[in-house]
View 1: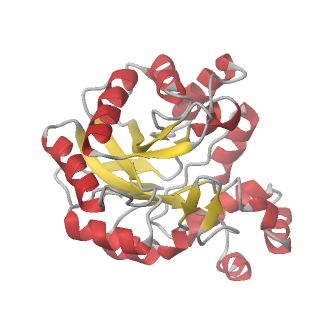
View 2: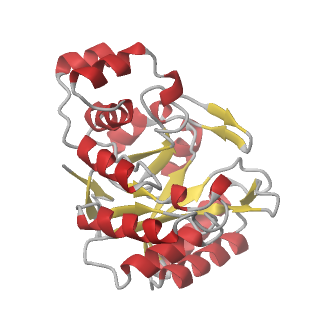
Length: 289
C-alpha cells in the first residue's frame, strides 16, 4: 500500500502507507538522549530496511536528538526515503512546549533541521500550530512558502490543525499533508498540558476531498487505554495486539491516512510493521465504528 504526497504538484512523493514517528527515540518526556542509543539507531536501520520510507521528526525532539540519530543511522539517505520534520514550536529548560513561530523563528528552525539532518532541502515540513497568538497563520505560512520558493523546503504541511485552520491554510497556498492526533479511541480534540490537540476526525473529510494525506500521531498513546471491549474483541479474532488493530483500523479507515506509529522498542517496531498486513473485513470495520 502506498500513498502520494502533493499528488498534483510538480514533485509528488510516493511512500509506503506505514511510516515511523521518531519522537519516542528520545529520553523521558521527549527530552535528552535515549536510554539505549544503540537500539535507537538499530530501530531506524531496521525500519528502513523493512520498507518504511517515511520518517517523522522535529528538531525540538530531544532537543535535536532524533535528527542526529537519523543522520547517524541513515546518512547518506537511500533514494525514496522521505524525512518529514516540524517547525513552529520549541522546548524550554523546564521541558514545556511553547510556540516558536515568527518568520525569524521558522527560518532558524529550518536552517537547524537542514544542518542536523545533513540535507540541502527538506522534502516535507509541517508547521506545528499552537494557537495563532501574536503571529497570524497567514504570516506563518507566508514564511514557509518563502523558504519553499528558495528551495529549502519541497512541500509544506500543517500539524495540530483545526478544521478552521486547515480551511484557512487551503486559501493561502498548497497544503501537502496534515498531521493530527488520531486513533481508534482518540478521534476528536484532546486537552493536553501544552494545549489542545485537534483530532483527525475533524479534518479527515477535508483531507479526502483535497487529496491530502492525514498523518496520525499519538494514536497508540492516548487512545488505547480508553478503547473499550470492541478493539480487544477484534484483536482476539486476528490473534493480534490492540495496538496492531489500532494501526490496521487507521489503514482501513481511509486510503488517505498514513500512520506513523513510534516506539523505542525493536519488538514493538516489528509488531507495528506486521500490523500493516492485517486485513480487517467490512464486518470488522462496522463492528469497530
